[in-house]
Length: 342
Image (cartoon, rainbow, N blue to C red; front, side):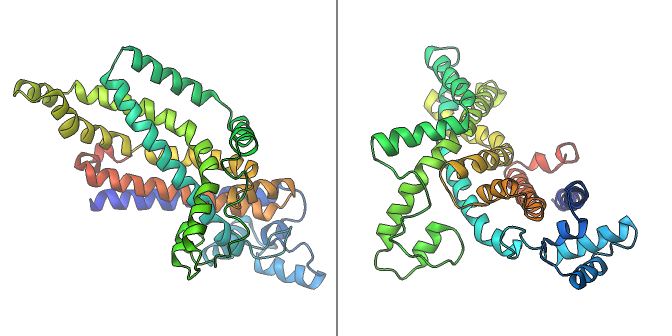
């Protein structure tokens, strides 16, 4: 396990260096002064510009400039937003939890829908229900997320009036910022209307989370179907049948548990796909997350926010991948070996 941990840690360090190199390079590709793209201080006076050039070592070689930029990143200094002139690190701390919350709820919905349907399709292999589930997966994966989001708002918010169409929670409720995760902050609050606020926040998150969850759910259907088919064809399943175990006992005692282990390693990859979809969905549903902020930064040509936001978001997704790898390795000792460490 130590070798597995060291391998993942070294991969993380290497990946982060590559990401910082990419972020550093963007400052030279964006129009304008490079040091302003680094710092975001578009209103800097000539004296302040001279100081910034010294801090970022713009009069030295490219390696010294990268070291200066990297030292600022390691200190948590991501520069200032060109649009708001506030520290980018503060904005990310405020907005990233909302994206994490929405993505986790969507991932949970995708797994609760996709994995059971995939198992049913595998158990009913080559039958009508299998074909119907695969058809649903193909159609669901093909639907554009922006069209699905607008359709969901038109149907469930405008026509039926069941669910709100925008925001995280109604303006009637004032919840203090503690963790940034809306549900946790509500539970930690002393408001007498805590449970009404919790219900209101739940209503707000259902539509965007379901829209985000559709595409990953269809992938989970295919993954779980393939994993279950592979498990049902394994020798130990045939041995269990030979011992006289019923079909239900084989499925619930052996097949599901082993198929789930095969699926876990793909959760990290689907989370990355899910965060990408969430960026578009946050704009449609006016969800105050980092995806919406990043897209607005692109519209506003806030170059400092773009490069810092992409860096933080990529780092977060990679950490989720590493966490998934550790969970998979804990459940499957064979994954810790040299042949499974890539």
